Amino acid sequence: MEQNSKLEKIVSLCKRRGFVFPDSEIYGGLSGFYSYGHLGNELLHNIKNLWWQKFVYGREDVFGVRTPIVMNPKVWEAAGHVQNFTDPLEGGKFNTMFKTEVGARKDETTTAYLRPETAQGMFANFKTLLDTTRGSLPMGVAQIGKAFRNEISPRDFIFRLREFEQMEIEYFIKPNDWQSIFEQWRVAMHEFFTLLGLPKVHELEVPDGDRAHYSKRTIDFEFEYSIGRREIAGLAYRTDFDLSSHAKYSGADLSFYDEETKERFIPHVIEPSFGVERILLAILDCAYTEDELGGEKRIYLKLAPKIAPIKVAVFPLLKNKPELVAKAREIYKNLKTYNLSPITCIFDDNGNIGKRYRRQDEIGTPFCVTVDFQTLDDQTITVRHRDSGIQDRLASAELPAFILEKIK
Image (cartoon, rainbow, N blue to C red; front, side, top):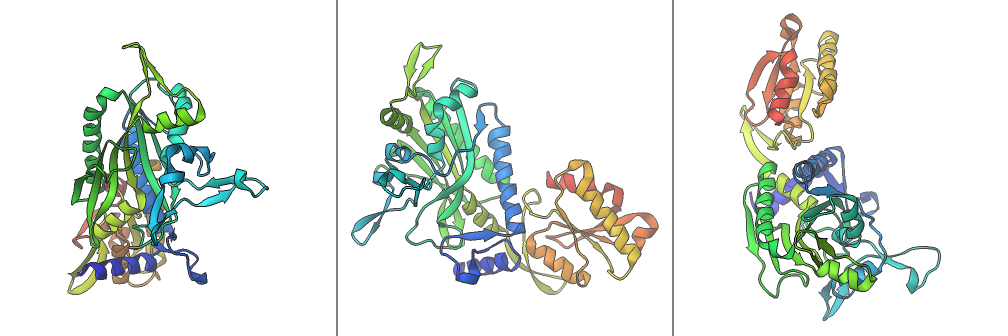
């Protein structure tokens, strides 16, 4: 498939099946803003949950937080965003932060901004976060949240947006440890891409002059999208720039006293940062597949079971046979409540069995369970595998454990 053609097909599938679609489209939409239907929202949830499991629950030194979208505007002055967060426009500079107003008055004192990144909420609250967590270094603070940038030209579907979501960690360290810790996070980021099933992730060492003003070293992680190689995540050594700036502007003491060395210093920071929508687009780009099965052309999403929005669909072979429908409903309800497990499943009796298979293929459901007349005799069901179309027959009582094992 040609690059532009493949993206167009992905966009069409996403709208047709309720993954992602332009927001407020009945009014002509608004460039750079998208809504996510039930399938897209579930897929986003699975991505974010895997990230949280690996980088927060999977570690002893990283703590999850949530900070506001609107902060004291002095935060953005201290961070350099008011002066430097710009794009070139017609020979001048255009600040890409969205402005808003706080309170009833309308003057310069009430001007605020929608955050263009989640990081500063973690820097500005560093002292409180340090005191209320482990109180020692290294210490990581993780956040998943919305950010807003008034992009001059949002484009390429959900790759470049005006409202987007970030998964970021600010990892506070002792200055002399930065190189070894940077390498540890570089490896951990590749592990996460592997967990998502994403191949073709490359590293670009950002040279002097191209790095952000706060960075001493930056690696851009780039993915081979169908639209070309583009950035999907980044790893930056931000030195002590952020905490030093906030200490200077606020007058607060943001230093750390090391009991071992008896030294006081401003902590340095390693920042792994991931774009949620860019990961979603990469997953869709990898998963979109066209092939032939049983002599018929089909489109399907080859999603890993652990991130697929629906894990299993349950069908009665015929919708006009009450005994088959009742048994299929019984199996469906059992799956949904099995040991409070994360088996997202749906019941589908709309159309013939072939159409139901194709519908589930297109949304990436890895397993389809069919209840037929043999089920009524021996309590066995068929399980169809999405990618191959192969069907297994097993006892219905074994189904939940079978699905859970495949999800792992």
